[in-house]
Figure: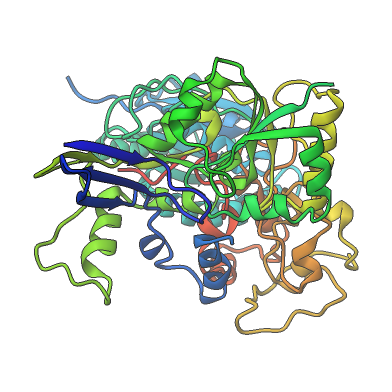
Length: 63
Length: 157
Length: 318
């Protein structure tokens, strides 16, 4: 089975990887989109004062 | 083999260092675990010293100064009180147990008290075990700080 | 003159540094005239394989932003270091750990549990969490291993220069580009695109005497626009933060949060912030001091917002 790996995906914000598996006749047998990043904002903002939250979570995406 | 804590002591010249000296000349026997550094005033103690001590492997840190009101420089130890209060909160946020860091007032005549203070912090830290604070540098083999890593000084930038 | 070869890469980043580069607006054309950008995931379609195929030292300058928090970030940091003549830690994350560095107060387990199980909008009854390798019918697929601890760029590879800021201001970015293009590089290890003095030097607010009897928060009180934040009891990291950003936060009505990093010769920005702020508290007795500092809601993160991985203790003890 032929495998095409797109690593990294580009021209967007964020990290990503796509693995495409081709059957013998060239059609797509399966395709996997993988997210190779996690920073953990959901956890590390716990306990922060409310006035900090907008200024911290804006760094989830600077675009 | 029992764990022997490594404790850094930062003592002010006028009161606490003299008090510690008195403990020595009086031949008082007490735990040898505190390594003493002398400063002119406890108000000179920068919180960086305490954090660096932990980062470099100290299991405990003891700051000692003159009793409030008796500071040789009048106001120095008031600054110490303020800095220590805030530093204790920061240390607990870092997960460092409060018993590892103490501020004590020891006057020049209190040799006995110095010995008691040292014995107390040594036993408290001994019960807690080694501080698991490990610095790592570029040569560290793994990131996961559960592993032992070679401690290196921080790179200033 | 041959065109410079530049690269700009993001690790655990948000894209803000790339946007800041683009915020030089029409000057981007001058940059394009002086340099070929040969790796820039946000804007150009070069792949990791293209970088791996380059000869060592092929890239003149790499602007590396984002913190190092997983094996892919580490791999790219080392790869780009090998392929670059000059490696620049660009932005707070690469310089100090940045906002992603706040994750150092938690463990990977705690983060995974929150993100993949506990958050209200998550439906994951089988409690599936990421693993570096998954075997699917077609073969093995992999994602990087996430580490417990976020690192700064210089804790992983040798760094030549630091450009601080979250993000660095476009004006300073242009200054940095001009330095790069001129070829007159400062001594290795220098912080470029920032002042050698603190924020207070640039700040236009009126400064008088500092005696704090009460701390206030911008969530519950309104600062006076003319006078120094600290004098009013509002936290400001100005005294322990490098200048260079033209006090953009102070001019917007909030105290400095420290994103430009510590001034020269400071080992731990948080420790210095703590020391400076504690010194100006007006109280002599422990009980009184305690009452005043109880009004500071989150000291570690307030004093060390952007630099926990660079701080002396680096992470919460585990």
